[in-house]
Length: 258
Ligand SMILES: O=C(O)CCC(=O)C(=O)O
Image (cartoon, rainbow, N blue to C red; front, side, top):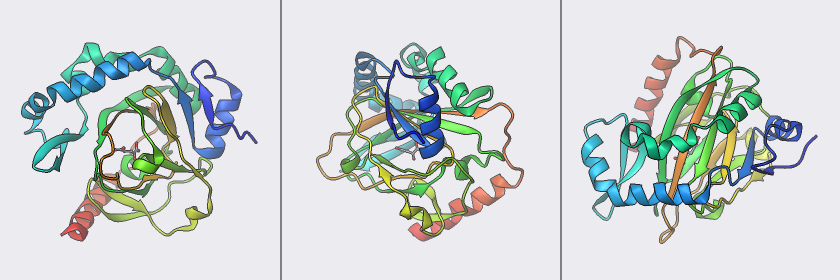
């Protein structure tokens, strides 16, 4: 059994990495994207944030905002490529696509390309598996979570249970805003936790059955921006009853927040 959890960017496509991914359902890769590109994107977002919000404000599915002291900040945005293709296309490189294919073991396609932000006072992310959101029959999917600046697990950064790739567990509605689902029960809590810290350009890759979560972001923490890419196997498909179930969970989550 492989115990290595953190790899360098010249160590990809190796069997050790695939074994760790299978054992833990997540791994970390250092320096996947050059720091200077991350800095450029971070400063582009902060400089142009008000204009971006104005441009996409009416598109409620694509843009979700955080409001802190009366000011609006991007929390989630799924049109970075539409916004500035020549800036964000650094993530559309063959190393990332080949690595996704290597870890899934099948041909893949890019299913989601998103910008996420964690500001001070950001609420908890409840423990969940991404496939509860995706609803894929075979859960053949993974996510690259690439931090554009430093991120710390003890300041609201993403944390992972070390559980092997496996089944999609039953989820119920959560009581947190922005993340409507959480794993039912607490048996997974017996597993150890991987607590990554990130430099700009470091990335974690998690399988869609990885269980991950984050604590509330403490006051005075520097805002973290993340680019998040999800790849699905071209052979997998969304279960026919998923949409209806998911809409019901979103409604239950809203009821809990009232
Ligand atoms: O940081 C976020 O907004 C989401 C993190 C997460 O749960 C994920 O990437 O699956």
